[in-house]
Amino acid sequence: MRIPPIPGGPDGRRMLWINLIDKTGSGLWVAVTALYFVLIGGLSTGQAGLLLGLGGAAGIAGAPVAGRLADRVPLTRVLFAVQLLRGASSLLLLLAHGFWQLLPLVALGSFGERSASVLTKLFAARVAGPDRARYQAVQRTVVNVGYTVGGLGASAALAIGTGAVYRGLLLGDALSFVLVAALVARCAEPPSASRTVAAHTAPTATTATTSLPHREVGAPSNPWRDRGYLLYAALDSAMFLYGCALSVGMPLWIITRTDAPHGLAAAIFVVNTVIVVAFQVRLSRHGRTPRVAADSLRRVAVWFLLSGAATAVAVVHMRWAATAAILAAAIAFTVVEMIQSAISWELSVALAPDDAQGSYVGVHGLAQSTSRCVGPLLMTSVVIATGPTGWIALGAVLAAAALLQRRLVLRRLDRPHPTAAEPPLSVPPVTVSEH
Image (cartoon, rainbow, N blue to C red):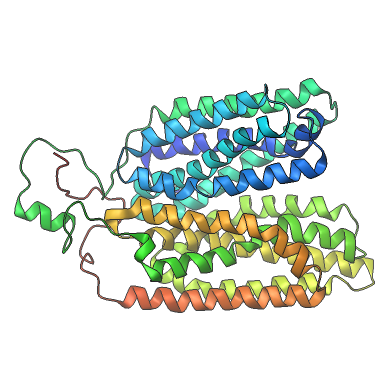
């Protein structure tokens, strides 16, 4: 059977290499971040946790700022600058010691990481055009491969465990950003509906009408005034809690509340990565179109209920049954991840007006950032603290969020839209000259 070509042409393929190198470097660093700050940075464990928390909070601003910039200047220039910022902050970490020296550098790195995430998403959406759902699936597969390769490299290095090894892993992460920036510099600027550099000619009436119907040039849509989109993003933020459930909730649940082998706390990440690599592209069909994506939210709701129920059942006092329940929960949460990520990718772009695509997607980027900040505390203080009932309630609440989002999205899609006859997003539009 012939494998369909990767959407996006040469720049689409180049962006996949960028993601692979970026996430391989991140995999080297993520596995040792807290250890580095304690053993090399001179912090206590409490200070290391506070440092990561404050740094993560600073990163929240990265998504909307980067998205807004991408509507006003060439996206590739912004992404190039962001990758250099990440590389510089990582290199300077090698020279920093103590909480107050490390904090601004960690904050810059977090800001750059969230900015790069949104910009990469925008690039992919623009360069892949109507095939963006399939491209996103391929990209997520590449990302998981990168994290796996980097994580294996970090695990091998940790067997030595010297200060030079920790610094070497951080240096590898920094150099990956420099290499990525060099690759970004070779990418052509993808077509955008919000800005096109044209010749020094006066725009015709036809051009102005085709570009931004019923809207004055210079007055783009504002996502902060779009209540429907903000509610959609807020519901996505709730559903993104599956990430914290897998990375924080389930490992702690295994160790503190179940009779399952403690090694399962690490094994569930292997299960997650293998399944994503094997099935993400196939499940991208759930984000094929905005309406298909909305209807697929019903499946997400069912998998959320199964995830919470399976995790709750793991408290049974039989080792084999607890193990089976944990594995079933890990699989269910991974299915949620694959389907919901395809849906979220499609809807976050498709529901955004073409004249403010970057700003809208940037605001949507706050959903995952907020979930990452709130999720760990919610898992430890609410879900795990209330026992099996907490996991069942989590599954039910997230399922309700999925169904509510489906209703909201379908209502928005059924609303008459003046640009319905326009070309699909990411297809080069006819736009008003910037001159």
